[in-house]
Length: 263
Image (tube, rainbow, N blue to C red; front, side, top):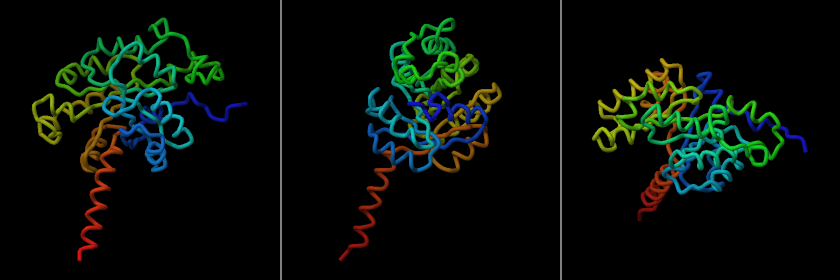
């Protein structure tokens, strides 16, 4: 059967490269039904959180298959970098991968080594037999994958900020993802991402990454914060999470009925 869609084309990567702003939402719950609800809400990218959420490779592939008909691109954060996990996720057709807690250029070089085919790296050639190459139906996979792969190192510590230039200058990365919550904790400010020191570091990081010609994204807690990040140069931002929205809606629904049904 002929394929009617270019499964290799990475719309998210090409949009952030072009500066086309992308709104995302995090999915912590490993559910295809939740993914479909979010996908039909018209977000640009789905932040599938395999670091903190209860996801595994099977749930992430199921989510990717579920949202395929919709105009949303899965962007998956894996628990940690490693040659084995990167091979599995890439061969499963996951093209956008966030690597948490990256703190040096050397780490990024290793990540790109694991994620790349020779001569740059040591990724094994299994794509023609698995989902990445649509089981052999994408004959030019090897020639095209470098243009479609989007590896996103995440900077979320003081050390990472200190080594920002080296991290962002590694060739082949798709962009940088900034984590303001862990950055605030690492700076000794708890969960206060609005602390002046955290805000200053975020402003510096976004501006500097853009100066280096690399797309940058992060998460925002309020529309005002999101606008400020976008004005500074961020081209993709995560706004909220499925669990967060469920808690808020459940609490608000109960309170509405309690007040309306008082006797």
